[in-house]
Image (cartoon, rainbow, N blue to C red):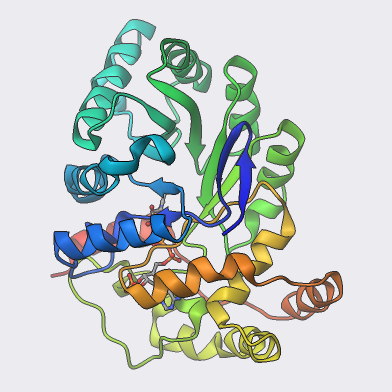
Length: 326
Ligand SMILES: NC(=O)c1ccc[n+]([C@@H]2O[C@H](COP(=O)([O-])OP(=O)(O)OC[C@H]3O[C@@H](n4cnc5c(N)ncnc54)[C@H](OP(=O)(O)O)[C@@H]3O)[C@@H](O)[C@H]2O)c1
Protein backbone atom coordinates (compact mmCIF):
# COMPACT_ATOMS: atom_id res chain seq x y z
CA UNK A 1 0.00 0.00 0.00
CA UNK A 2 1.08 3.58 -0.45
CA UNK A 3 -0.33 6.77 0.99
CA UNK A 4 -1.49 10.20 -0.14
CA UNK A 5 -3.04 13.29 1.35
CA UNK A 6 -6.54 14.69 1.46
CA UNK A 7 -5.47 18.25 2.25
CA UNK A 8 -3.68 17.72 5.62
CA UNK A 9 -4.92 14.19 6.35
CA UNK A 10 -2.87 11.19 5.20
CA UNK A 11 -4.80 8.15 3.98
CA UNK A 12 -4.04 4.97 2.10
CA UNK A 13 -4.20 5.53 -1.67
CA UNK A 14 -7.22 3.24 -1.77
CA UNK A 15 -9.83 3.38 0.95
CA UNK A 16 -12.77 1.17 1.86
CA UNK A 17 -16.36 2.12 1.03
CA UNK A 18 -18.33 0.26 3.69
CA UNK A 19 -21.88 1.03 2.48
CA UNK A 20 -22.49 -2.37 0.85
CA UNK A 21 -22.29 -4.10 4.25
CA UNK A 22 -25.67 -2.55 5.06
CA UNK A 23 -27.25 -0.92 2.06
CA UNK A 24 -27.48 -0.58 -1.68
CA UNK A 25 -26.29 -3.91 -3.07
CA UNK A 26 -28.90 -6.47 -1.99
CA UNK A 27 -28.20 -9.28 0.45
CA UNK A 28 -25.59 -8.37 3.05
CA UNK A 29 -22.89 -10.61 4.51
CA UNK A 30 -22.96 -11.59 8.19
CA UNK A 31 -21.60 -9.11 10.70
CA UNK A 32 -18.67 -11.40 11.48
CA UNK A 33 -17.72 -11.59 7.80
CA UNK A 34 -18.00 -7.83 7.31
CA UNK A 35 -15.79 -7.20 10.35
CA UNK A 36 -13.29 -9.78 9.12
CA UNK A 37 -13.02 -8.04 5.74
CA UNK A 38 -12.62 -4.57 7.22
CA UNK A 39 -9.85 -5.85 9.52
CA UNK A 40 -8.22 -7.72 6.67
CA UNK A 41 -8.09 -4.49 4.66
CA UNK A 42 -6.48 -2.73 7.61
CA UNK A 43 -3.85 -5.49 7.87
CA UNK A 44 -3.12 -4.89 4.20
CA UNK A 45 -2.45 -1.21 4.84
CA UNK A 46 -5.85 0.35 4.19
CA UNK A 47 -6.33 3.25 6.61
CA UNK A 48 -9.37 5.05 5.19
CA UNK A 49 -12.91 3.86 5.95
CA UNK A 50 -16.08 5.48 4.68
CA UNK A 51 -19.57 5.16 6.15
CA UNK A 52 -22.69 7.33 6.62
CA UNK A 53 -25.52 7.63 9.13
CA UNK A 54 -28.09 6.61 6.50
CA UNK A 55 -26.45 3.36 5.42
CA UNK A 56 -28.79 0.75 6.86
CA UNK A 57 -30.24 3.44 9.13
CA UNK A 58 -27.32 3.26 11.60
CA UNK A 59 -26.44 -0.40 10.95
CA UNK A 60 -23.34 0.54 8.95
CA UNK A 61 -21.92 2.96 11.48
CA UNK A 62 -22.42 0.40 14.27
CA UNK A 63 -20.70 -2.27 12.20
CA UNK A 64 -17.78 -0.08 11.15
CA UNK A 65 -17.39 1.21 14.73
CA UNK A 66 -17.10 -2.35 16.03
CA UNK A 67 -14.71 -3.41 13.27
CA UNK A 68 -12.27 -0.53 13.66
CA UNK A 69 -12.40 -0.21 17.46
CA UNK A 70 -9.10 -2.06 18.08
CA UNK A 71 -7.18 0.30 15.77
CA UNK A 72 -9.36 3.41 15.65
CA UNK A 73 -6.47 5.81 16.39
CA UNK A 74 -4.52 4.47 13.40
CA UNK A 75 -7.15 5.05 10.77
CA UNK A 76 -9.05 7.85 9.09
CA UNK A 77 -12.78 7.52 9.69
CA UNK A 78 -15.29 9.40 7.55
CA UNK A 79 -19.04 9.62 7.98
CA UNK A 80 -21.81 11.80 6.55
CA UNK A 81 -24.98 13.54 7.58
CA UNK A 82 -28.10 14.60 5.77
CA UNK A 83 -29.38 17.93 6.99
CA UNK A 84 -33.17 17.84 7.08
CA UNK A 85 -34.26 21.27 5.86
CA UNK A 86 -37.71 20.76 7.41
CA UNK A 87 -36.19 20.18 10.84
CA UNK A 88 -34.03 23.29 10.65
CA UNK A 89 -36.21 26.34 11.10
CA UNK A 90 -33.97 28.83 9.35
CA UNK A 91 -31.83 30.09 12.22
CA UNK A 92 -28.12 29.37 12.52
CA UNK A 93 -28.65 28.10 16.09
CA UNK A 94 -31.17 25.50 14.94
CA UNK A 95 -28.82 24.36 12.19
CA UNK A 96 -25.97 24.02 14.67
CA UNK A 97 -28.11 22.04 17.12
CA UNK A 98 -29.24 19.77 14.28
CA UNK A 99 -25.71 19.04 13.05
CA UNK A 100 -24.41 18.46 16.58
CA UNK A 101 -27.20 15.99 17.32
CA UNK A 102 -26.42 14.03 14.14
CA UNK A 103 -22.69 14.02 14.88
CA UNK A 104 -23.18 12.87 18.48
CA UNK A 105 -25.39 10.00 17.30
CA UNK A 106 -22.79 8.96 14.73
CA UNK A 107 -19.93 9.13 17.23
CA UNK A 108 -21.81 6.91 19.65
CA UNK A 109 -22.50 4.29 16.99
CA UNK A 110 -18.93 4.47 15.76
CA UNK A 111 -17.53 4.04 19.31
CA UNK A 112 -15.30 7.07 19.02
CA UNK A 113 -15.18 10.65 20.24
CA UNK A 114 -14.08 12.25 16.97
CA UNK A 115 -14.44 11.86 13.22
CA UNK A 116 -11.59 12.57 10.83
CA UNK A 117 -13.86 13.75 8.02
CA UNK A 118 -17.54 14.69 8.37
CA UNK A 119 -19.34 15.17 5.06
CA UNK A 120 -22.58 16.92 4.27
CA UNK A 121 -24.09 14.02 2.30
CA UNK A 122 -25.93 16.30 -0.13
CA UNK A 123 -25.72 20.08 -0.24
CA UNK A 124 -29.16 21.47 0.64
CA UNK A 125 -30.52 24.06 -1.79
CA UNK A 126 -32.24 26.03 0.96
CA UNK A 127 -29.49 26.15 3.60
CA UNK A 128 -26.53 28.48 3.02
CA UNK A 129 -23.33 26.47 2.59
CA UNK A 130 -21.57 29.19 4.56
CA UNK A 131 -23.70 28.39 7.62
CA UNK A 132 -22.91 24.69 7.41
CA UNK A 133 -19.22 25.59 7.01
CA UNK A 134 -19.39 27.77 10.14
CA UNK A 135 -20.81 24.94 12.23
CA UNK A 136 -18.17 22.55 10.88
CA UNK A 137 -15.50 25.13 11.76
CA UNK A 138 -16.70 25.17 15.37
CA UNK A 139 -16.66 21.37 15.53
CA UNK A 140 -13.08 21.35 14.22
CA UNK A 141 -11.96 23.86 16.88
CA UNK A 142 -13.58 21.67 19.55
CA UNK A 143 -11.79 18.56 18.21
CA UNK A 144 -15.02 16.69 17.48
CA UNK A 145 -14.05 16.46 13.81
CA UNK A 146 -10.63 16.90 12.22
CA UNK A 147 -11.95 18.07 8.87
CA UNK A 148 -15.08 18.23 6.79
CA UNK A 149 -16.37 17.67 3.31
CA UNK A 150 -19.25 17.94 0.89
CA UNK A 151 -20.71 15.19 -1.28
CA UNK A 152 -21.80 16.02 -4.83
CA UNK A 153 -21.31 19.81 -4.53
CA UNK A 154 -20.97 22.19 -7.45
CA UNK A 155 -17.71 24.11 -7.90
CA UNK A 156 -19.48 27.26 -6.63
CA UNK A 157 -20.69 25.52 -3.47
CA UNK A 158 -17.14 24.30 -2.84
CA UNK A 159 -15.74 27.82 -3.16
CA UNK A 160 -18.36 29.43 -0.92
CA UNK A 161 -17.98 26.83 1.81
CA UNK A 162 -14.20 26.67 1.60
CA UNK A 163 -13.89 30.40 2.18
CA UNK A 164 -15.56 30.02 5.59
CA UNK A 165 -13.98 26.74 6.74
CA UNK A 166 -11.48 25.04 4.41
CA UNK A 167 -12.77 21.71 3.09
CA UNK A 168 -10.69 18.57 3.58
CA UNK A 169 -12.39 16.53 0.87
CA UNK A 170 -15.13 16.46 -1.72
CA UNK A 171 -16.80 13.09 -2.33
CA UNK A 172 -18.58 12.64 -5.66
CA UNK A 173 -19.33 10.04 -8.27
CA UNK A 174 -16.37 9.62 -10.58
CA UNK A 175 -15.29 6.81 -12.88
CA UNK A 176 -14.48 6.07 -16.52
CA UNK A 177 -18.26 6.11 -17.02
CA UNK A 178 -18.99 9.34 -15.17
CA UNK A 179 -16.54 12.13 -15.85
CA UNK A 180 -18.55 15.34 -15.54
CA UNK A 181 -16.59 16.53 -12.49
CA UNK A 182 -13.39 16.70 -14.53
CA UNK A 183 -14.81 19.91 -15.96
CA UNK A 184 -14.90 22.05 -12.85
CA UNK A 185 -15.07 20.23 -9.50
CA UNK A 186 -11.75 18.36 -9.70
CA UNK A 187 -9.87 21.45 -11.00
CA UNK A 188 -11.42 23.47 -8.15
CA UNK A 189 -10.23 20.88 -5.63
CA UNK A 190 -6.77 21.07 -7.16
CA UNK A 191 -6.69 24.86 -6.97
CA UNK A 192 -7.87 24.94 -3.35
CA UNK A 193 -5.89 21.90 -2.10
CA UNK A 194 -8.97 19.84 -1.31
CA UNK A 195 -8.94 16.03 -1.59
CA UNK A 196 -11.27 14.35 -4.08
CA UNK A 197 -12.82 11.02 -3.05
CA UNK A 198 -14.61 9.24 -5.91
CA UNK A 199 -17.59 7.02 -5.13
CA UNK A 200 -19.11 4.43 -7.47
CA UNK A 201 -15.64 4.52 -8.99
CA UNK A 202 -16.07 1.08 -10.54
CA UNK A 203 -19.51 2.15 -11.78
CA UNK A 204 -21.07 -0.13 -9.15
CA UNK A 205 -18.72 -2.93 -10.21
CA UNK A 206 -19.48 -2.73 -13.94
CA UNK A 207 -15.94 -1.60 -14.82
CA UNK A 208 -14.54 -4.82 -13.35
CA UNK A 209 -15.89 -6.54 -16.48
CA UNK A 210 -17.30 -9.32 -14.31
CA UNK A 211 -20.99 -8.55 -14.82
CA UNK A 212 -23.06 -9.46 -17.85
CA UNK A 213 -26.55 -8.80 -19.13
CA UNK A 214 -27.54 -12.15 -17.58
CA UNK A 215 -26.92 -11.00 -14.00
CA UNK A 216 -30.01 -10.49 -11.84
CA UNK A 217 -30.12 -8.18 -8.83
CA UNK A 218 -32.40 -8.45 -5.79
CA UNK A 219 -33.68 -6.40 -2.86
CA UNK A 220 -32.23 -2.90 -2.43
CA UNK A 221 -29.54 -3.48 -5.07
CA UNK A 222 -29.17 -0.19 -6.96
CA UNK A 223 -28.23 -2.16 -10.08
CA UNK A 224 -31.95 -2.92 -10.50
CA UNK A 225 -32.58 0.73 -11.34
CA UNK A 226 -29.41 2.42 -12.50
CA UNK A 227 -29.66 2.60 -16.24
CA UNK A 228 -26.12 1.54 -17.08
CA UNK A 229 -27.07 -1.94 -15.80
CA UNK A 230 -30.10 -2.43 -18.03
CA UNK A 231 -29.64 -5.12 -20.64
CA UNK A 232 -29.41 -2.80 -23.60
CA UNK A 233 -26.80 -0.55 -22.01
CA UNK A 234 -24.70 -3.45 -20.72
CA UNK A 235 -24.41 -4.59 -24.33
CA UNK A 236 -23.72 -1.12 -25.70
CA UNK A 237 -21.00 -0.47 -23.09
CA UNK A 238 -19.05 -3.62 -23.97
CA UNK A 239 -16.45 -1.66 -26.04
CA UNK A 240 -15.46 0.19 -22.86
CA UNK A 241 -14.95 -3.07 -20.98
CA UNK A 242 -12.98 -4.48 -23.92
CA UNK A 243 -10.69 -1.46 -23.89
CA UNK A 244 -10.00 -1.68 -20.15
CA UNK A 245 -9.48 -5.43 -20.46
CA UNK A 246 -6.91 -4.86 -23.21
CA UNK A 247 -4.82 -2.72 -20.84
CA UNK A 248 -5.39 -5.21 -18.03
CA UNK A 249 -4.01 -8.05 -20.19
CA UNK A 250 -1.00 -5.99 -21.24
CA UNK A 251 -0.17 -5.10 -17.65
CA UNK A 252 -1.07 -8.43 -16.08
CA UNK A 253 -3.62 -6.64 -13.96
CA UNK A 254 -7.41 -6.86 -13.76
CA UNK A 255 -9.93 -4.48 -15.31
CA UNK A 256 -10.92 -3.18 -11.85
CA UNK A 257 -7.25 -2.48 -11.11
CA UNK A 258 -6.82 -0.56 -14.37
CA UNK A 259 -9.88 1.57 -13.54
CA UNK A 260 -8.44 2.37 -10.13
CA UNK A 261 -4.88 2.93 -11.36
CA UNK A 262 -6.22 5.31 -14.04
CA UNK A 263 -7.78 7.63 -11.47
CA UNK A 264 -4.82 7.37 -9.10
CA UNK A 265 -2.56 8.47 -11.95
CA UNK A 266 -4.65 11.54 -12.67
CA UNK A 267 -4.08 13.52 -9.50
CA UNK A 268 -2.24 12.83 -6.23
CA UNK A 269 -5.23 14.09 -4.23
CA UNK A 270 -7.69 11.52 -5.65
CA UNK A 271 -8.46 8.66 -3.24
CA UNK A 272 -11.05 6.08 -4.40
CA UNK A 273 -13.11 4.10 -1.89
CA UNK A 274 -14.33 0.91 -3.62
CA UNK A 275 -17.14 -1.11 -2.05
CA UNK A 276 -16.15 -4.78 -1.57
CA UNK A 277 -17.80 -7.67 0.25
CA UNK A 278 -15.51 -10.51 -0.71
CA UNK A 279 -11.92 -11.24 0.26
CA UNK A 280 -10.93 -11.56 -3.39
CA UNK A 281 -12.17 -8.00 -4.08
CA UNK A 282 -10.23 -6.62 -1.11
CA UNK A 283 -7.03 -8.22 -2.41
CA UNK A 284 -7.69 -7.14 -5.98
CA UNK A 285 -8.74 -3.56 -5.32
CA UNK A 286 -6.12 -2.73 -2.69
CA UNK A 287 -3.59 -4.34 -5.02
CA UNK A 288 -4.37 -1.62 -7.56
CA UNK A 289 -2.21 0.77 -5.52
CA UNK A 290 0.77 -1.16 -6.93
CA UNK A 291 -0.39 -1.06 -10.56
CA UNK A 292 1.48 1.82 -12.14
CA UNK A 293 0.48 3.34 -15.44
CA UNK A 294 3.19 5.09 -17.45
CA UNK A 295 2.65 8.51 -19.01
CA UNK A 296 2.59 6.88 -22.44
CA UNK A 297 0.00 4.30 -21.39
CA UNK A 298 -2.12 6.96 -19.72
CA UNK A 299 -2.11 9.18 -22.81
CA UNK A 300 -3.02 6.28 -25.08
CA UNK A 301 -5.79 5.14 -22.73
CA UNK A 302 -7.24 8.65 -22.44
CA UNK A 303 -7.19 8.98 -26.19
CA UNK A 304 -9.04 5.71 -26.67
CA UNK A 305 -11.50 6.48 -23.86
CA UNK A 306 -12.37 9.79 -25.51
CA UNK A 307 -13.67 7.89 -28.55
CA UNK A 308 -16.01 5.66 -26.56
CA UNK A 309 -19.59 6.68 -25.88
CA UNK A 310 -21.01 5.70 -22.49
CA UNK A 311 -24.63 4.57 -22.19
CA UNK A 312 -26.73 4.93 -19.04
CA UNK A 313 -25.91 6.51 -15.72
CA UNK A 314 -26.36 6.33 -11.96
CA UNK A 315 -28.37 9.17 -10.52
CA UNK A 316 -30.12 9.82 -7.23
CA UNK A 317 -33.34 9.95 -9.29
CA UNK A 318 -32.68 6.42 -10.61
CA UNK A 319 -32.00 5.13 -7.13
CA UNK A 320 -35.16 6.72 -5.70
CA UNK A 321 -37.13 4.44 -8.06
CA UNK A 322 -36.12 1.44 -5.90
CA UNK A 323 -38.84 2.49 -3.45
CA UNK A 324 -41.49 1.71 -6.04
CA UNK A 325 -40.47 -1.86 -6.89
CA UNK A 326 -40.66 -4.98 -4.73
N1 LIG B 1 -21.47 10.18 -1.13
C1 LIG B 1 -22.39 9.45 -1.70
O1 LIG B 1 -23.49 9.90 -2.02
C2 LIG B 1 -22.09 8.00 -1.97
C3 LIG B 1 -22.88 7.27 -2.86
C4 LIG B 1 -22.56 5.94 -3.09
C5 LIG B 1 -21.48 5.36 -2.44
N2 LIG B 1 -20.73 6.09 -1.57
C6 LIG B 1 -19.56 5.51 -0.89
O2 LIG B 1 -18.66 5.05 -1.88
C7 LIG B 1 -18.39 3.66 -1.70
C8 LIG B 1 -18.22 3.00 -3.05
O3 LIG B 1 -19.37 3.23 -3.85
P1 LIG B 1 -20.12 2.05 -4.59
O4 LIG B 1 -20.15 0.87 -3.69
O5 LIG B 1 -21.35 2.57 -5.14
O6 LIG B 1 -19.13 1.83 -5.79
P2 LIG B 1 -18.28 0.72 -6.46
O7 LIG B 1 -17.08 0.41 -5.64
O8 LIG B 1 -18.12 1.22 -7.84
O9 LIG B 1 -19.23 -0.54 -6.54
C9 LIG B 1 -19.35 -1.53 -5.55
C10 LIG B 1 -19.82 -2.79 -6.25
O10 LIG B 1 -18.79 -3.23 -7.11
C11 LIG B 1 -18.44 -4.56 -6.82
N3 LIG B 1 -16.98 -4.69 -6.92
C12 LIG B 1 -16.05 -3.99 -6.25
N4 LIG B 1 -14.83 -4.39 -6.60
C13 LIG B 1 -14.99 -5.36 -7.53
C14 LIG B 1 -14.09 -6.17 -8.25
N5 LIG B 1 -12.78 -6.04 -8.10
N6 LIG B 1 -14.61 -7.08 -9.11
C15 LIG B 1 -15.95 -7.21 -9.28
N7 LIG B 1 -16.84 -6.46 -8.60
C16 LIG B 1 -16.37 -5.55 -7.74
C17 LIG B 1 -18.90 -4.80 -5.41
O11 LIG B 1 -19.19 -6.18 -5.27
P3 LIG B 1 -19.35 -6.91 -3.86
O12 LIG B 1 -20.03 -5.94 -2.95
O13 LIG B 1 -20.21 -8.07 -4.19
O14 LIG B 1 -18.00 -7.28 -3.39
C18 LIG B 1 -20.13 -3.93 -5.31
O15 LIG B 1 -21.24 -4.63 -5.82
C19 LIG B 1 -19.58 3.14 -0.88
O16 LIG B 1 -19.27 1.98 -0.14
C20 LIG B 1 -19.88 4.31 0.01
O17 LIG B 1 -19.02 4.30 1.14
C21 LIG B 1 -21.02 7.40 -1.35
